[in-house]
Amino acid sequence: MSYRSDSTAALAMFTGVLFIFTGMFAFFVPHFSPLFFEHFLGWLLLIVGIAQFVQTFADNDGWPLVWTLLLAALYIFAGIVFIENPYGEIGQLTAVFAAFFCADGILKVLLSYSVLRFNGWSWVLMSGLLSTFLSFMLFAGLPGSAIWVIGGLFGMNMAFTGISVIIAASALQRLGALSPEPAYE
Image 1: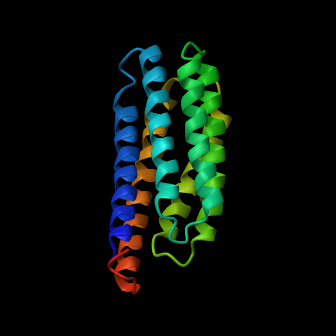
Image 2: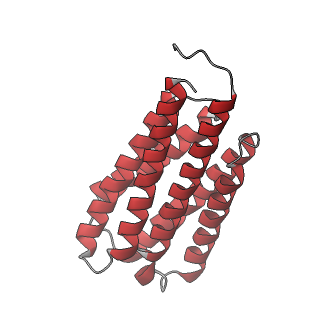
């Protein structure tokens, strides 16, 4: 396997771990001040979005550039929204989460159909379906869902996204091991 494929898989795995860390943190943090949580969550989303953006351009290896860039832009945009408006009302925050989950789910479903040739495509699809399902749950439960949404649902979504990224990176690594590439790239 070439150095390029190794470094791409490692960067994708790192991005997946960041997603899982963000998810676990979000799941266990609601005990802290909502202001702190919203601001910190914004920074985590921004960092994850930037990592997704960098990983997209590091080595595309056939992944659809448009869908992965749109996902990165979504995470960066959501991060900026939470950083710039940390004093938002909990109901507004929940509505933003629901819209985020809806857009995230749709983009992941589209991405999964674009990468059918990779082994991890079904995990990307499952992550997208989960995000879409969570958005419908939130929209149906507003305003009552505002209290429990911050940690639980967001944490599950981010952790599942991280798992799907790691599985896809592992498939990419195996694919790279099978494809003949010059070792001197």
